[in-house]
Length: 170
Image (cartoon, rainbow, N blue to C red; front, side, top):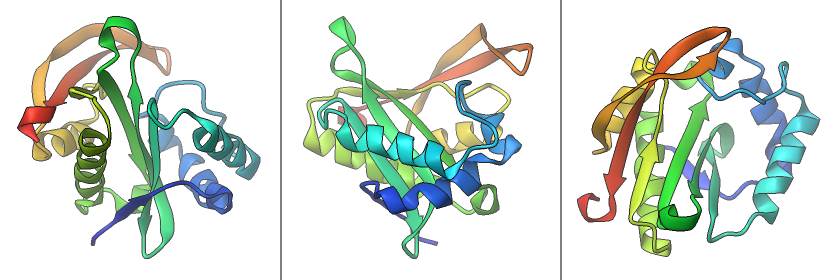
């Protein structure tokens, strides 16, 4: 299954509302997303991504046969970290374990390194999210360590893992 990443369209809101209304997906994301996630929430998110500074926010829909099945973004950091960017992503549950997210991560990293001065892309998955850690490992990200007691999710103190990919490693 080959996916494509592309710029968001407002008409994608319904598809992401369906994906993000799944508690299993939200359990692997940072807090702040409404649950259940409505089509209007999707419109608001897509609008903010479309109006964001394109040199700071690299946000794409993940598609399969032109159906949106997830989201991936790379976000430039500030100050002394201005050439570093954090990556985040999710994909609808029915597409887990099929290599699609691995393909999407490769595509966005190639895009960001080719179209910006970003030197380092990092991701911080929850330590319990083995699937996300495997995606990063399969795409060449280096494991840098465990961030102990780094977050509180669903009332539990949890570890996160730090992975990074450098421009010259791509």
